[in-house]
Image 1 (cartoon, rainbow, N blue to C red):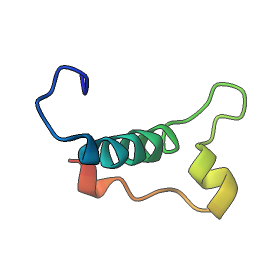
Image 2: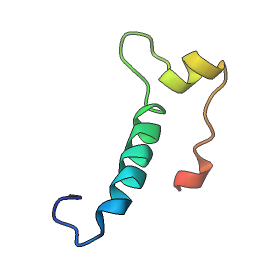
Image 3: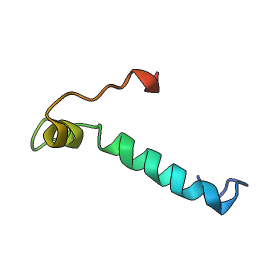
Image 4: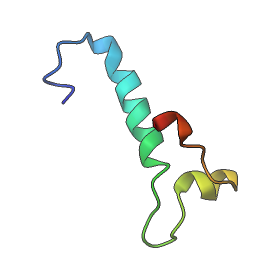
Length: 50
């Protein structure tokens, strides 16, 4: 998707950071918790994604 966008390359780091943040807030099958929960000890706030 980013490779088809007509945005400057300077936006790629923001896109990668956002993707990594979202992936860290998705539960895993093995642990049934998110990586964020395991690292911080609390459930992540996802209200800003709505």
